[in-house]
Length: 322
Image (cartoon, rainbow, N blue to C red; front, side):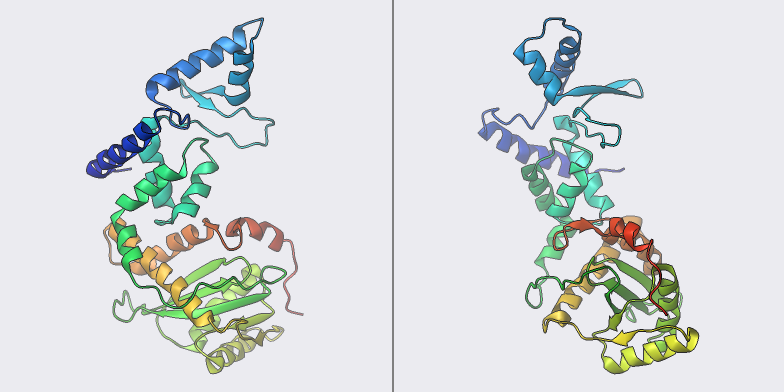
């Protein structure tokens, strides 16, 4: 991955100031010298026959794994099913935070924390905050005025109980006759599916929804901020394609739903713009599968879960069509 060296240098200038202010009391930051010392201490602790308290402390906190001929410090694992978590050298912090940030589509602090904590032990929030302050696309995104109020997520008992379909207008930037983006989202998990559309027609929306329904099942309730008439027309077209289908039009439980949808759509548009800039292309339809993956693979602070993981339970249930 290509890094912006000037940003990396600035990152460490700011982080060095934070570390120096702590007078080396923070053990989360492991320099190359300290890392090598720890490697030797762990190996010594394993070999010594009569162990002292310092040996037990080292073995309780650290273990060593050999990856491609290189020894790395890891958190001791209790079982084969436990995920391996590495200790990070101070000089590698920028690359690790940067890679996680890009992989989740310039996600915010909580998403980065969740992403790096699954693989690394000692990447802390203050380093992540410094990185985010230096990320130009994120600063531009945060400078945009936000609409509406922040509301609690709509709670449902299971996935696919209540779903929503809306359209993002891309007519100002058409590509290969595609002018709209269909956004299909589950209210419980915030799991999202994106599809490019050529027209804002109920027939085309229904055709794309049919692919989703035959893969994940049919929701009990479908609603849209495009209005009741639009949803009823979509449902009518769906029933003409699948006669056994049973689904009803519903409404959001919160009056602020429109603002929430607008913010979600703005987030998707921002991720698409960032993806196109990163990949040096204007073909936004090609970005949808990647943006979709980044949205669904990211930790959601409202539902406290990764959306993709919830699908494991859902795929074991029969479709609700009879």
